[in-house]
Image (cartoon, rainbow, N blue to C red; front, side):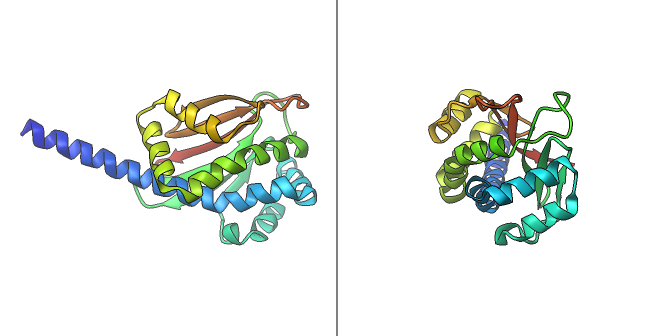
Amino acid sequence: MKQSSTKELQSTKELQIRRNAQALQKVAKSMLPFYRKIATNRTFAGQWSTAVTSADLTLMGKLLASIPALSKTTDYGTNGIGYFVSFPFPYPIAFYTNGTTIPPGTVQFTFSTRAHRSIARALLPLYRKLATCWSFAEAFARAIENKDNNTITYMVHKWVTSSDLRTVSIEDSGVALLFRPKFSNYPYRNLLFRETH
């Protein structure tokens, strides 16, 4: 009896890891063209920063709608110092959310286009790998599920090689990457996390 319940727990955990990996892949595929556009298009990136700092959700919606992979996205928001884009998934995940923000309590209504573009450039290889490589996404999800910070740090640093990346941590069934661009007055966190309700 004990053995069968252990097997059930293992299969439930494996299923959860698989679901999380699928969610990570979908979010990475959807956000990759956004980060590419931020990194390569100064005008777009500037408009995005304006939308963030002025809490202009209409402008955010228009900018997201210009990216085919995000054109149907309706769950997004800003806190004046960063932004979040959420993707709905079947229970038990509910939502996976991605975004970049200055840590709350640091400053208000500030978001540097230059810092965001620098972070987006640094993130592109990681999001491309997550989006296109199932084994990587599954290993990433497994490290998060097991709260294996050493593995997740290694996996992130392999693809995010910028010296601006200071720390990698597992938070909220997801991962937080803390960047401190050399020219920036403030650190920025890129967050990829699961929200369950």
